[in-house]
Image 1 (cartoon, helix red, strand yellow):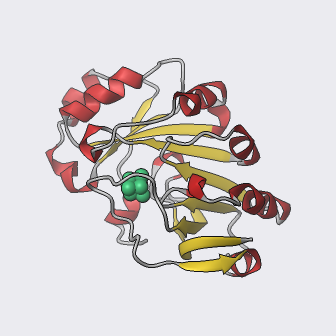
Image 2 (image 1 turned 180 degrees about the vertical axis):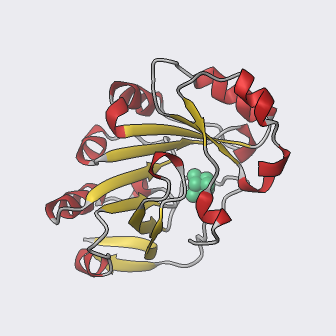
Image 3 (image 1 turned 30 degrees about the vertical axis):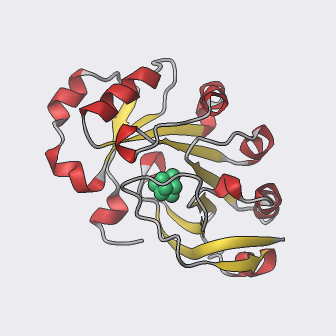
Length: 204
Ligand code: SF4
């Protein structure tokens, strides 16, 4: 099994409900979107065998984040997840919500879906992904990056107060310009506003 990998490293999780948790990151190279504010390097990558990937992970961290790029584009993703679970890692899948595969979602310990708002240039997602999260609130979170009022309106359009784990993530370069008091008035109590702390701490 080969995978197109951009980088493998360990750091702290900087986004969402796992914020501050040390973990391994496997970053895949390819993505099916082209967000305006994307900070992922798609130029560099290498084809790695499964065993090489496993050998580069730090064993003392229980969690492995599969991130990108878009991990769901990897043909053998399920095989990698099964192998990681076999080695007693916990798998956090970070996906943009455009590709659904129930078997892959079921195989992960936690799924973090990062739906792209209008400011990204491609506000698209698969409804089946959202349905899965709504049915599995104990192992999922739904994140939306917010850069402006249009993004907030988009968020409100998909918001459902019965789901518990909504995250509004201020787009990093616009973080100082957003009106958080106004934002608070328009959201419910199942929404957390969480910035990207890895960028504040200047770690990967
Ligand atoms: S989905 Fe993520 S990795 Fe892909 S272009 Fe958008 S921000 Fe970049």
